[in-house]
Length: 459
Image (cartoon, rainbow, N blue to C red; front, side, top):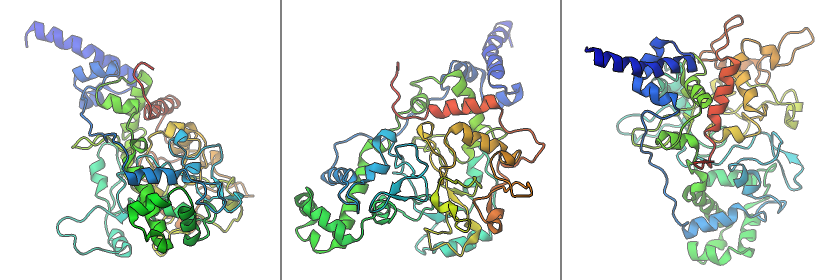
């Protein structure tokens, strides 16, 4: 190589060396990730490989979706006539819960506390149906029951999750897909009807009650035009059509899936990440650090679909019991996720007890409570627990009278073998070094902030 090109290469390597110091990676690991030119761009927060994303196109809502929008904000469908879908899934809080409570209150008089933290309704339009394991190749005419799928999964091998190779663990025969924390609904239509009749949520007493509210409200003629003059002859049909309209609203209105974060702009080469966000992004994807991307996938699909920051799978993480939930005052009551109490078809599959759906991390920096029971109220608490769950469990769990730490106290001991102790960062033991430093935790939180919707260039 000529002196001219050696000199040019040396100048290109300088920003790479600067990035090494910036993110704390060794030259060898950095070289395996980025070309020197890529490192130069990254050092300025620029995406070295921008991608054209296939984004939902905003269009006028159909008549069906317009009906659904009205119903989504209608309180008269609830037993108390004071609670709408939007009361717990507020547009102002990313279609998640408003207020500071870990769980929402509902019921006929709004005095009954729920059992789980309310998840966001954003980014559910691509949620797959519930299943156990990936789709089988070839002819799929023979549909297996979830019990049969569970039996096949029990006999399969399980690959640990790694942010460095998500395709490998994607083939695991594990529960995935569905809506709610336990995946018991497959469609947004089913999801909408769940809270409607839940006695501690909207608490509608019957389909007849809801049908009468629909028929006497401003939607009567609209529903008859869409579904026929006889739509109210059957309360079940009227309610089913109304829930379908709510689902159409969530599918059609891009406010539920805007992909308007700075990270989305960065993926397209239209924005820069700060130095802290960049370091957080690298730690998020480092299998030996956060390993976050093993479950919260952050790369666009081959056809340009933007990432949803979830693998749609279920995990038993063993988060602490939340004493703020009234049901937890009963020491014999446990929320077992996939195997009950709100899901009945997998109660015999005790290998899934304690497993809950992995949520999207989009807009997580604006959430006020985390995990299915809302036990943590900040991302700093969440990441601190991820790092120190097994290194210093006494920081998160209570002790019995003898001083023994009651780790994983929100899951009966007989099911604690289900808890993930193999995937990083849960593969640490007392005496090991933490997977993340305090500075890295701060940087990952900064990166998660770049996932908030509503980014405007120059602001």
